[in-house]
Image (tube, rainbow, N blue to C red; front, top):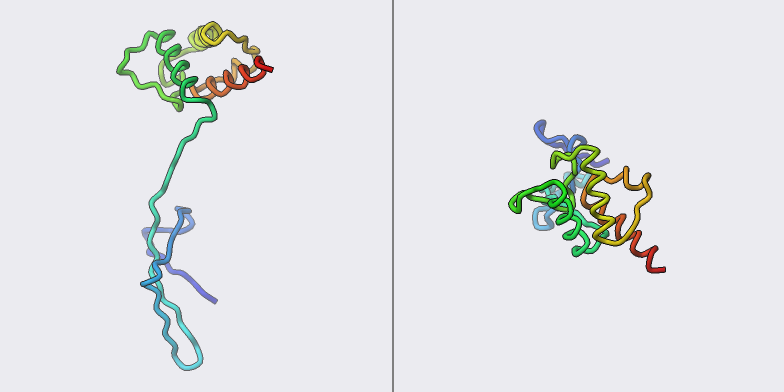
Length: 136
C-alpha cells in the first residue's frame, strides 16, 4: 500500500491541483524482501483559459453597444466576462442594452432569453444563436 504524506500547510484535499512526479527524482531502494519507492512531488502551474463560443467580432460589437448604452469611457474595461451589474447597470439599463443589441444586429430576442443575459459573453452567444436561426 502506497501513501503520500503532505506537509500540514498544503492539504491535497483542500487544493485539488495537478501534481507531477519528476522522473529524475524517483528513487527505489530495497530492504530485505520489501521494496520502497521514494519520489518528490511538485505542483504544476494552474492554467486557466476562458473561451467564448461567440466570434470575437460579435463580442466587440456587444462591448461597443454596452459602452454606448451605459455611457462608459473608452478606458473602462469591458470584456466578454464583464457582468452588466459590475458596470452599474440596473434592470432598465439591461433592457436598453438588449434593445440596442437588437437594433445593431437586426434581430429580435425573446423576453425570457433577454432576461437571462447577465454578461457580455452571454449576450454575444445568444446573438450568434439568433443569427444562425435567422440564416436558416
